[in-house]
Amino acid sequence: MRDKKVIRQAAEIIKRGGIVAFPTETVYGLGADAFNPFAVARIFEVKGRPYFDPLIVHVANHTDLDRLVIEIPSDAKKLMERFWPGPLTVVLLKKENVPDIVTAGLQTVAIRMPKHSMTLSLIELAGSPIVGPSANPFGYLSPTTAKHVQDQLGDKIDFILDGGPCEVGVESTILSFFEKRPLLLRPGGVPLEEIESIIGKVEVRPIEEEKPLAPGMLPRHYAPRTPIVLDWSKKNLDSYRDKKIGLLVFQEPKNFLKFHQIEVLSKKGDFREAAANLFSAIRRLDALNLDLILAEAVPEVGLGRAIMDRLRRASNVISTTNDSISTFRGMGKKAYTTEDLIRDRKCERNIEDEEDRG
Ligand code: TXA
Ligand code: MG
Image: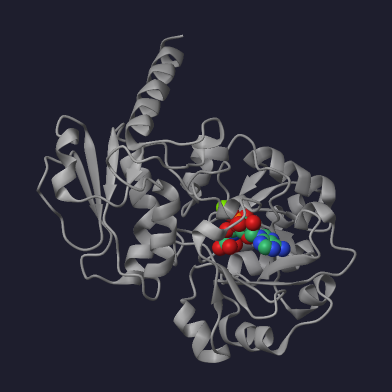
């Protein structure tokens, strides 16, 4: 009963052109009426997201879908039947009336039907599909609880619909049907193997070939403030002995260094549990004012592929030595090293301390 009232309230806000954070099975989204360009523009503003990065449109039924796309290829249909509602986004040719601000001027639109009863009701009551980027400031980790949203964007948006913690924990798998063959744009909540078991081989675009046109796919993205080092070996960690280090591991805690904190993603070694814990665990580490987070690689099968994709983007430190690396922060500077990132972090902290005092 109470839920119904709250959802109705949220739907009214969307109808009036407002912004509502909504729960999904993957991560929390930031919702606005997809057919109201002014409301959509405010989403970009609130997130600090560049306008050239298109948004995913969330639908509750096939009538919504028909308002957005011209035609649906048969392979896309098969996948929708199997995985919707669920963590799969398909990129299809859009209808002309879909506002350009939603698709960043592209001919295509990304669409998904999320698996969360509150949000499906929200879309139905709002009477319109809703855009929904992840509800985080641009470049930062996606939120998997209402509190994450409240902490970072609470004062900038009109309403937060609290639907509990997200079950899947990593964003949807994005598949484009615009190319000759289906192309995986982002690994996510539906494992590639499951998709291929239905439609056969799918092309996968390697990270290094990505044009930095769609920042959701920028090499450094989904990033905490603390530098994350992913590819490390015990022997080259000596230089960090005096640093405050957190460890993010898949299954088993390790003690080869004196870690300030250790986060275990899944004691059972279960990918689903690990994915569901991933962003929260990184956020907890990020809150500890560490110098560095060491992250352990997970096997790249099933959901492990999405986990590794997010870890790579959150870190993008190729080596713990002095190799040059390009990072998202590197927009101002071409190449960063782990040392640079640590120095950056110290600098940020000093600025924060000054702000606290002032
Ligand atoms: O699980 C999810 O997908 C979450 C929840 C809230 O639904 N949403 C999400 O949205 O992750 P966002 O905006 O953080 O990421 C959407 C990604 C971006 O990388 C964007 O570049 C890409 O989808 N995208 C959107 N429209 C596209 C299009 N027409 N062609 C190619 N990529 C597109
Ligand atoms: Mg995002």
